[in-house]
Figure 1 (cartoon, rainbow, N blue to C red):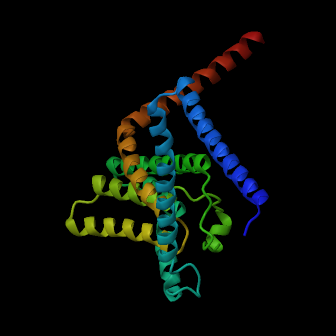
Figure 2: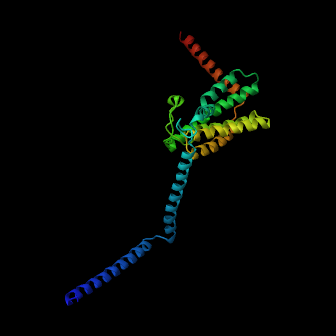
Length: 266
C-alpha cells in the first residue's frame, strides 16, 4: 500500500503537468494570434505550403531524370551492357560534332558553283557559330556538372566540356536538321534520313552517358528555336557584297586621305 506522502507527491505531479499543458496551449494560441496580428494574411499559409510541394516535385523529377539517364547509359564504357557497340555510337556522335560541320560548310562555301548555294552555306556557317555562342552562354549560366558515368575519349581531351546543360550536339542536330529540311531537302526519303540522323545523334549522348535526359530534351528544343532566329537574320549574298564593298571603300578612302595628308605636309 502506498503511503500518504507518496499520494500527495503524485497529486502534485499531476497538477503540475496539467498546468504545464495549459500554459503550452496558451503559448500556442498566443503565437498564432501574434502571427495574424503582425499583419499576415491567410494567403501566406498557402504560399508556405506550396513551396515544399514544389520542392518535392522538382526533386522527384530530378530523381527520375538521374535514374533514366543512368539506365540509358549502356555504352558508357567497354564494360557496360552494350559496350561492344560503343565505337559505332561514338561514330554517330562524331557526325554531330561542330568541327566536321564547320569544315564541310566552309569547303562547300568556297567551292560553291552558284550564288544560291554559297548563300545557303554562308548562313549555315553563321548558324553554327551562333549555336556555339548560345550553348556556351547557357552552360556558363546553369553550370550543371556532367554525369559521373561520362568517360573522356581522345576527342574530348582536345575539347574539354565541364558543364552538361544543354547538350550542344542536340542543339546542333536539331538546328541543322531543320535548316536542311527548309533549304535543301525536297524528298521524303531525305526527310526521313535527316530526322533519323538528328534523333540518333541525340540518343548517342545518352547512350554514352555524356548528358542527362533533360540536357538532350532542352537542347533539341533550343536548336529547333535557333533556326527561327537564323531565318530572321538571314544574310543574302547581295547584302554581303554590299557590306564588303562598303568596308573596302572605307579603307580605300582612309588610305587615300592618309597619303594626301602626307604629301601635303611634305
